[in-house]
Image (cartoon, rainbow, N blue to C red):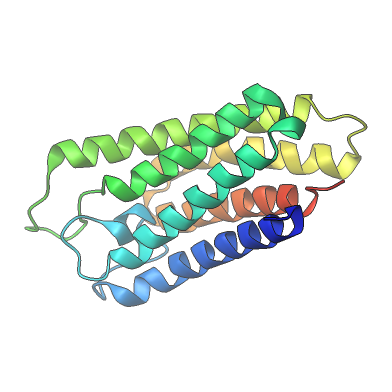
Length: 193
């Protein structure tokens, strides 16, 4: 597959993932709030329609794994490994689902724990990867540095905000995902530069 075809395919995977996450709240119980509940809760255990959000995780993880392999020469080994870990852990969040927010719905506590572990590793991998890729950039523009700094700050500050402002967990997490989509999309578009 040509570089251009790979680039377009990765961008389409990222867009399809974002669409799945946007559509997920419409596929599950009406008590779900995209402002209050996390994306993971829209893919929770025992929910009819959770496959929509799980598809978003699978598509996002696949896009990032592909991008990490393709951009290894530009991202260097450590940056590719860190961001590839993000992609792999994104797949893990699809495989191991969050407990449901609905009371009385049975769930597997071990699976919920594995979901939390993959999500936490994913966040650390993203922050690490952004730092490693940013540090390895040659002739980085002010925009490059700004986007990298925004991604890094968001990956650290937003999870802290989610723990403090639980009524806005979903909104905050979605803003963090949006920044990650922008960062990965920009890297995909800049592929051949």
